Image (cartoon, rainbow, N blue to C red; front, side, top):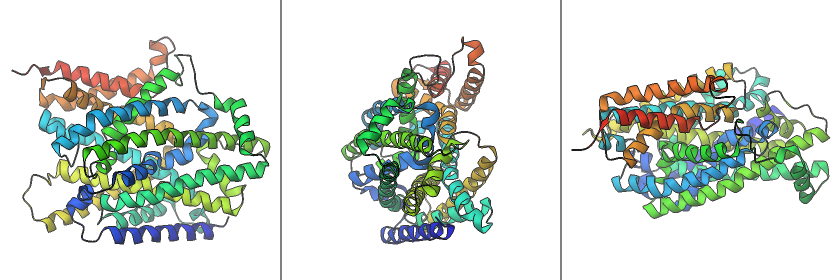
Length: 482
């Protein structure tokens, strides 16, 4: 597949997004940008959120990850269902009752100024890192297979990619993204299904034969019973539940789409249906990963040292031009779906949480101007983080993403849990200190766990420990309501 063809596909797909943006962003204002005027159809939001939840990390990293972790990731996915149930029954009713634009303003109502700013800061930190990781993964593939051929430097590729996202989101915001995510989810899922079909055709086997091969292979192992192992099924399940709660329920990016629905019941239907669909879709990605490894063995293809490169290498070099076209469309869809909503959510959080858009009596035109400046500034920050990440990437991005999430989302988990499940007041000035100490303790515990805890290795459950430490620290600085 030639670089020229890949570039043409990229440009045509981008043009399609601009058309959708133009249609959906007419007569938009700040309410449209932040919440889509609260009129988004729940089923459109639910379908579009599949693409946002998966992103380029699932599209590329999960299939390659099968080689080292087999199907153990499914236990994390099963945990998601429990986490999404908690979001639908506990968090969404709270957000709708308070009619929140930024979900972190709940912390100000419950505890005070510093709790609010601490929660907002950790979201900004988490989402900047997470969005950068997701975008890096996709842009890096485009760089390797397209732009390196034109001797275009990586930093320029990132700048151009981010500029395109800014141009189609800066006016319509969430009102546009609800609909562009629908398109992107469709192309991403089609890319996975068609890729599997093409591998089956290349190997001259039918679907049932491939299922048998996957089941009989080492890749299909899902349950790991050794509690020392990071893949221990119970750790994975519980981690999945809490990952869903923090990376969806306590994440402005994901909740902003839910809050754009007309009413609470619509948002709840959205989140429950999403949780069930994600089980099927993630299993499909793992199945794709197993078929990629089986095909690579049968065709005597060397497995790349960085497993994130397995899917793009086979799709673009071994399965023919049509496979390359399908892969690139899915890849671009994954890139845009993870980047556009993150940029919009970060802009929303900064404008509402730090600039006080809902509290300041400023004319609409001035707010729109400020919002656009913030939008461009956050894009510039993402560019810098993506460029920096390329210099240090040495493992599957999904593993790195969940590991860092354990540190950055843990304080959010502790803060919201303390607010929801206790009636105690906090010494608000001490909250930033507690939220800083807890991740530090977790870092040292993780780095020394094998020596300190008899060979035990922390996996994604580090998030739970971080949340518990934050909760405990908050309890120490709290007092009963008089």
